Length: 423
Image 1 (cartoon, rainbow, N blue to C red):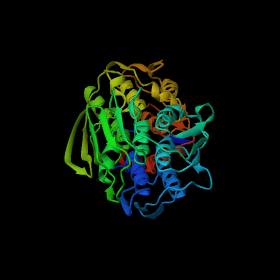
Image 2: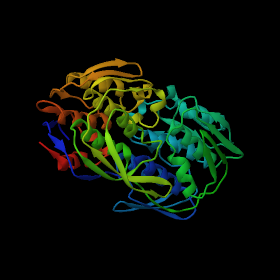
Image 3: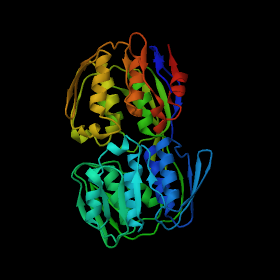
Image 4: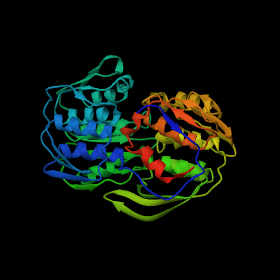
């Protein structure tokens, strides 16, 4: 897609149904690939990242069939792929599969695109090596080489919160001996712990302490994936900065993922959850956002694991809030698809935001009337979509460079956004 021109909007309204959850889609496909029998995954996210996972598990021997948004996966013993496993832009694919394949006794060479090849892999490699995995890569970057090895459980304390590392270790443990214990000082998203139970795995997780017997067998199951709260966050943000009323349907509201909603509540956003229920082990609800006025607030490292992907959106909301907002403990943003701290700072500043950059976050003063500008999305789906919302709240038109990256997580984002805004 070429440059996109966005004009200001007066409000956003209606009811929105957002795409399926990306994190759960990844995990469901991976676990199904080694399960006994055929699993059915309904409402699977057919984004670029999740397609990378489907292709990857097929290369290890699973049979994958697609019909609309329903995926059937017939599990098989992992075999070493004849060719490198291309993970595209997906950090979740490579980090989780590195652990899973190691535990399943397969070798592999993992590669990725230019962006993924710049992202750090050492954090997942080191604890896997403690389990006995033979995994190497040059300078902690892709390509990553995995050789067959026998794994054993470990007692591991997470040095920093990371759902990807935690998940890689749990998936590796499925084919290891002994027992695995993982200790979290700050709890990261827990989709893996929840979905393992659907596949018949016995696991205990409470108060940041996870314990699981290694070597358990996966059993095929049927799963329906809820809406992705990280995708819903864009519409929540739009309603907040345009002071609008909007309903978002069938959203996963797992507490370990709902930090952005809680953060905006702290800033004065009025919202209500209704139609509460469970899909499998995941809590789901409809979210009604009501017209509100935002105020500045302070957020620290303990708030980040449950909303790290939404911090650029939080920064945008802070530009429209009364007073000062301080965001710290978000250093992880620097090693995402791009340096999201720098990208958020530089592009919002172009639009007139009163924003100061820090190594691990921002200081933002508001409210400020943003100005239309020519901005860059840095080929990062979350930065592109955040800037699109900033443009809606700005004076004058804005131009965003190449926007094709949104297909990574939210296919059809601009079309869906356009359906609900009033200019």
